[in-house]
Length: 602
Image 1 (tube, rainbow, N blue to C red):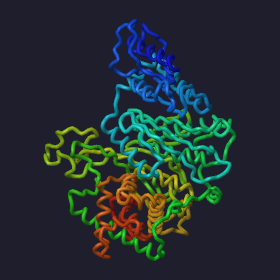
Image 2: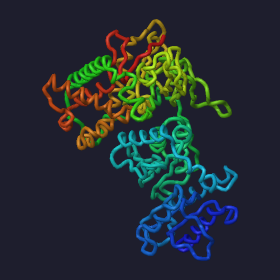
Image 3: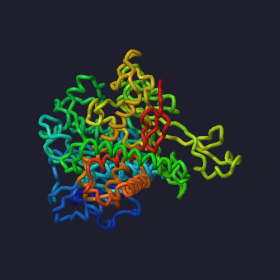
């Protein structure tokens, strides 16, 4: 504290200069009201050019007049990845329960790193800090943060650092105000930091920030909250996982309060019909914000059909345009310096339609969820003749040939095989590209309202660039995935129609939750919302332009997206319908859109 912190900083400087000579067992420093000052003349020469890699925790008060906040901040910036605790007080050591917990958490992390490496933690931290994310990892981190900014309300997310190491704050808000839940009375904020190799090889770092005392938010409940975050992230390594973590922890906090000494299992139970009836159904289309103007069901249906017409026209134009290749979905996979784009395909459909079977057939390898301890996690997705075999999404990769003309060597003809290709080539010499394949749990009618945990399953699709609807062409399963047999066959066309309706209402409900912000910020906010569904700004721009052109030609409405505040429910449904793409109707199954593709199983 204060002068003691100055002394500890000098010890860290000496340790950095020669760890074997100076304090060889130094593991971390906690500096309260710390400051930097000229080095004493008695010290040997010290190189102060680089940052100190020792784990450090810096604490200061905004009202401190002796050691100003700027002095303590300047000291923290001399360390690699400093952790901070800033309070509203003056020159003292804060010792409230939440603050003490932060000290404990920091010490535990520093000691765990020290024990795990079996060596001085300084060298370990220095080695990691010297590594920066590569270009692809950087792009994935930036895209996830942009998507979160589009999905959550203004003020719910605060970016603290947009450069490496990236970190930001997320406010955790109750889904509903219910007594007896695990939510504490005072707000919870989640600090999220990205390691250099997240998401491909590591999970994000989480820290809870709050002002609740141990009676309002028991330490065991806080530990369970962090446990759910970390275990959910662990299960999603290889892909961006923050959104899944947020939904998982909110599901726990929304649940009835549990014994403060009890461990909370992360696994979810397979939903039964009784649970579906008792489950709290959330209608995402219902919001405290004022939505678009009310209109009749007939007008809403007309808006949806017009959206289909717009999407169909876009597809026809794309078929004749090399620039709008359907595979790229408006997201450039090459050119302009070789930008990276993670292309994700989400498998959607009712339970027991064959999604996991298709996933196993299509993926080069897959990461199976929910395996028992001691067994390998690598293998095919679980397949069984009953609904909800899949609960957590299965993740895998498949290799697909690049579209002709999309790679520079395509112009070389028979010589193109002389060019290197990371993942090889197909028999025709086309470069193979890795595509992420995501098999999510089956949807049931009413999924967008929360039935059958539908909200959670739909949210698993947020990062998908394209949705593939796997359709049960045999008609031997009902909408809940239960076997009906040959005596009560269902119509696959009905499945196509109600699945699309669920997707439309899901996206529409998400728009309604932010409609007030959308009407204030206009086209830019709306574009950001749709970019959160795995689509580029270029793609959403094309959809907006097509809708404006359609409305101008048919209704003589000019620049419709400059008048969003005048829209009614039919206008919003038209937008969502056009964005989702062309769904086949009647008995035409052979159709592929930008966003929705169909696979028939039997």
